[in-house]
Image (cartoon, rainbow over all chains, first blue to last red; front, side):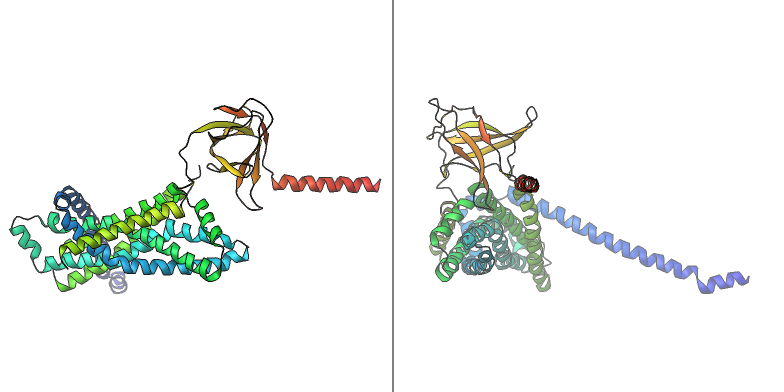
Length: 284
Length: 157
């Protein structure tokens, strides 16, 4: 009898039960979070498949896509060119400081060109594209959903994915590689300005060493492939987040934030995977 | 902004974008020096290739005349077999020597060809029999040390 009392007071089965219940609810919440993410991924993949299957309108009425190339590509030109120029100039300044210690300042062109063409061009252009154009795409589609324009289209038997989403998707996919190429070109020009014009590295050595070291297939083509992959990833995330946004002011703002965060992470993660595939053991 | 203006700007954008790609390919990359001309394949066996890489240059008198296309290990002779393609414009005598050289002190390694005096020329699929392996720094140092040690012994006598 006294034993029973101590049991009840010190370690009651009731508190144990509530602990188990708390643990279970935590596990359930974790499980439902994971499940909803997996569900969203599946929905996003189905969305992409449907989008590609129904992009006939976007390609037949190419004007729709051209207008989106204008919004995603042309209006991003200034930020891409200016950032590229400054990135190239900083690369040249920093690279010169280090290379000059080894008496290899002529290799400045190689350093600037390889780091831009292989990595910085696609990655930084992709990040800028995600925050400049991707967020705009999400906000636009999300707002169309919030103001029930999408439902109105469905009511009029117009497929909103074919009419609204697909042109934006293809516009982004076409713009991104061109923007990345422009970023690299502007960066190399910036590197030339600082390296040759400002510091005084020999112009002939700058260009000829660059041409000897940069390979068309291994470096430039791989950079272009990277930018195409990033373009697909960023625009896919942008249009999906917009289409899937909760149709309220708060929902649209959250979707826009998610677009920028998710696409930036996707670009960096994909960049690692692609670099590992392309540039390791590439010599053999 | 009306539609034709948008078309114009998109046209400019696409043209400039492709221009940038072309600039990367021609001015930054080596498309201009990338030749699709006829080549012929020759092989050479080396006891040691050092740090030679596939796609490394093959030079003669400092001029690039070809590229290394494959490197494999021959289990029969325990030697490295290097395949290289040479530009069809450049013909070499059959007794040409192939050496593995280094450009600069820390530079990449390449194959240097020194033409011989044979009147018959190398043909496609031919072999370069006279070869000289890459210099391995460790071997060089140990040789130098042994020589020094040997000199020291002679002086004592």
